[in-house]
Image 1 (cartoon, rainbow, N blue to C red):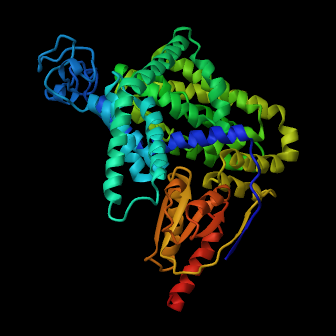
Image 2 (image 1 turned 180 degrees about the vertical axis):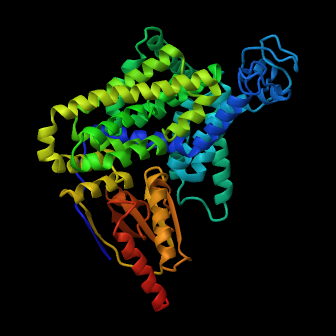
Image 3 (image 1 turned 90 degrees about the vertical axis):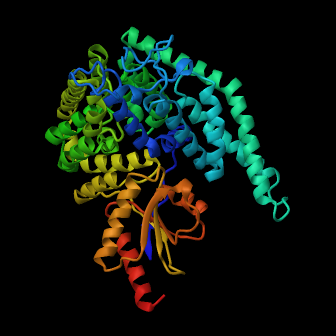
Length: 543
């Protein structure tokens, strides 16, 4: 089968490096978002100010709530304000006798999950185990949730394990492999855990303290909205993950542990600026941009797929100023009125934002909604002025401008996106088509296992896998396994790997013996029909 393709445009080395760092950080955090949400809901329900806490703003109280909050004497994990008569309070203000869920999850479970995921990204299961052991030393060597420590020690420990194994690769006598592997990993994990306890942990504690102080300084001087000057352009260029997952998420968790919520979770995830931009293009845009903006607004606001508005901003770069102003307005609203989220909103949809905000009470939810609305209105008004001022020029050049902006957005991201490709299809209908890719794939063995691969193994690849499964089912083919995963996790067992153009070479390196198919659009690629036909022919020929 053949598909079409041109070489991906070369990208700036620094930007690519930052993107890869952001992708790696996302790869540590995103697979564990469900655990963050679970912790957030438990916190929302059972801290003293939560729904069932002693200080519940709703007047509800559930007697066993103190056991869920927990304590543990002088080594208590958390120190929530208020007192619970159900338990004896210790000298340091912590409740005795219960480990509890809230503190144990944020102190141990979440950092260890991050460390294990990071270790697996670097060196599979073996790296994950050693990373988890080493990070445990960092955790118990500090007195705050060690997310930053887990995000650094985890991959570092896995990398050290990988280098250690290379020292005796191929030199172990047959029959002693398991003995050497288990003892070497155990001893290395012990050494790294001790080093983490005495050295690495205190260093990370200092770094966390400095970063936290910097955020507090910005809040005290009411300068936090200035962060939008960095965040909003970074989002459009896909450089935001390093900031969001590297700084905002770990510091936000620490703030949420102390205060029940954090404004940092809503700096990047606020869907207001993107909504305002897309609404402005809906009313004042031209051609394909105007026609596609309403659907894009629904996907962005309710689905949380922010990348879908990036081509609109790139097609009219001055609208980035509108995004900065809207983002800053939203941050200002939360800063002045005390709004924040109890846990990360991922993806950044209004539904996730609502779930993460409601634990702070009705007023907090109102403030968060207000920050979204204000951000959207400010962005909408400024974008509308910009679009109206250049409307005549846009009518003449919109097709080329918007189509080129979509291609540039995908180049910035370093991979294709089904949502962006749908926009490209709209632009193509107006006379502008995004460049396709070229590759040749020939089936040399029966295809039973098809894998969609992308950077994080979530989102776009999951949607693509669902589309192909449906096509195979309609063709009466139901015994083909179609899954999605991160490129880093490809193990060579896939018969056929489907990736976006910019990622195909990386996928070939991880799974060289598989058939590789490059597509432009995970949601509606013509190559899927060829894959279905190839599988059907194999079935009919009895292969």
